[in-house]
Length: 153
Image 1 (tube, one colour):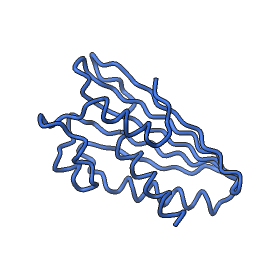
Image 2 (cartoon, rainbow, N blue to C red):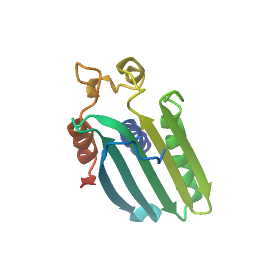
Image 3 (cartoon, rainbow, N blue to C red):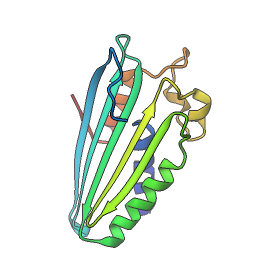
């Protein structure tokens, strides 16, 4: 059960996240959260950058999720969850890398919302994020992040 909820949380966070180049004429919202799991000696640092235009429509999101643990089993579980969630995205609108180096796992996901369609998002139950004009409002993503416990500024 714990493993399933971990996968769901990772998927939701990847869904609402998304290269590190700043799109022109955009502003940026940053959401962060640190989770400590003492039973597995694991620390998870989450950072989400959301770029949006003057009308507050999302242009791009970048997620950087860093898991540090002395447990290789725990790191393996997170690695599998990040890879499974990332495999749901198409390279025409997203990039996803997962790397393990020692006791640190990093998942980096970028989503280009100017290329993501509602039909594409329906493949991972993300179609409800879209407005009738086919765009995603900043407030929608911010609400999704905050519902997962992140703090946005």
